[in-house]
Length: 132
Image 1 (tube, rainbow, N blue to C red):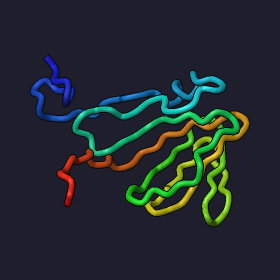
Image 2: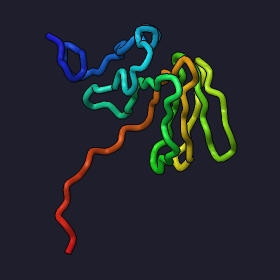
Image 3: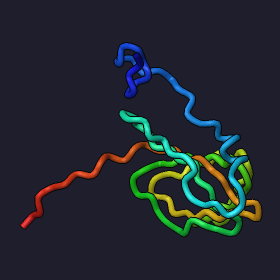
């Protein structure tokens, strides 16, 4: 029997696994569907990853990620990355580094924008006693 946590018979040695066919996922998504299409959910992981779809004309408003570097890979469609230094086209296949502390927004083009993001996993929330 295989361990659910590691995918191995002995439950101790992690094995590489194919998680998702991103080309098929991006091709199967139609029109106005928005949001996360897939998320990395394996236990014990050190990374977070998401496949996100922005329908035509939609956007992710200007924001700043203070703690995490993010890699963004455009899987389908195209869009625009807007940063303090201007607008940058995001065609299919563009791999972009979004360094922590950077300010940016994303907007989808007429065919929409489907992209993969990968970053270090955030630590879990800790509940602490209220300070007096």
